[in-house]
Image (cartoon, rainbow, N blue to C red; front, side, top):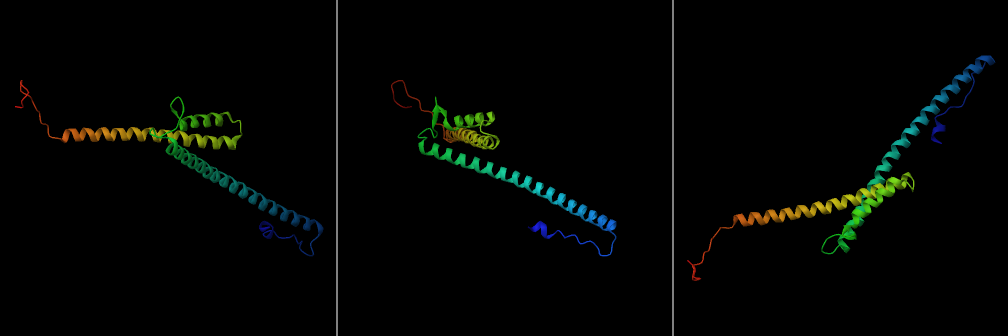
Length: 167
């Protein structure tokens, strides 16, 4: 009702001939129509901005939730490997990401659900990529530490005499 409070009622000026009163009324109607169009465009812009921000927020929530669930499942049930293998050793999160994107691209469930499926697929692929690259980085760090330790140690060469006694 806030929009109606800004509108004024039409009160024709007293003492005008009917033709002038009609012209005055027409001007008043045109003013109201401009105000209406202005409010209508403002409403459309506000709805578009709200929809854009809600879409980004919901996508962030889907990605974060999916990544958290996959991280928990990998941590809880992953064992020594650190991940759950679904099909022939392929990690479950990678399989889920490919499947979610496949269903999302098919658009079988509609635009909004497809968008959510793409967000879940992004999270799954990201979890898989993070886990793989983290493992490779850890392996490189251990190899680098081992190489540094080996080169820092003094090199002592021991030789044995032909009869087994040390020289």
